[in-house]
Figure 1 (cartoon, rainbow, N blue to C red):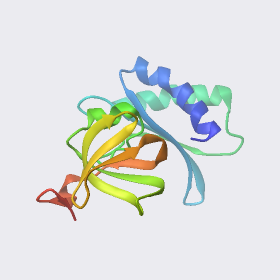
Figure 2 (figure 1 turned 90 degrees about the horizontal axis):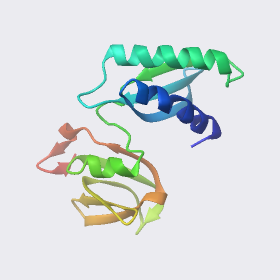
Figure 3 (figure 1 turned 90 degrees about the vertical axis):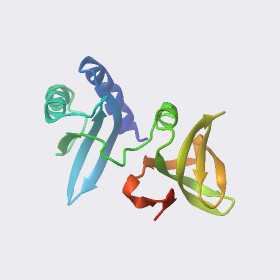
Figure 4 (figure 1 turned 30 degrees about the vertical axis):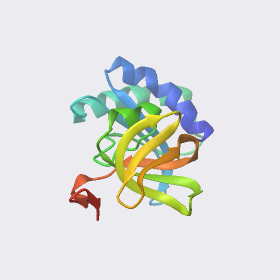
Amino acid sequence: MSQLTEKMTRLAEPFAVQLGLELVDVEFVREGGRHVLRFLIDKEGGVTLDDCEAMSRLLDSELDRLDPIPHSYMLQVSSPGIERPLKKADDYLRFQGRPAVVKLFAPLDGQKVFRGVLKGLEADHILLETDDRGIVRLPLEQVAKSNLAFEDRWKGGKVK
């Protein structure tokens, strides 16, 4: 996580709590030639447009006041979507039984990308049941990116 996204996470977290939301992730990316500051929010039952607007209003005011980014950017607040990123250790417990994709920084036994069903978390290792390797233990500190997988990609328990 960059210094900016860490700072933006600290800024946004109290607003999310105030609104009864979970701050899932903060991204600062370049898309289509412009910078985008994106906040992903969620709540039990899913977020609504009203939730996104309320969070956007709070963030917009505070970002205008602090002016943390020296150039122009677009502010976005949205749902994490069906392929929600898994960012916190608790996510691996919360979404047990769901299909996921985990990408590592470096290969583990010759493999960097693992697809399977989340089986939880044990001693800082993600437990993922894969079709070809059974249950694998993936070190949390080696995770480059991790997200839920859209279940329609699965046929008979196997990833397409």
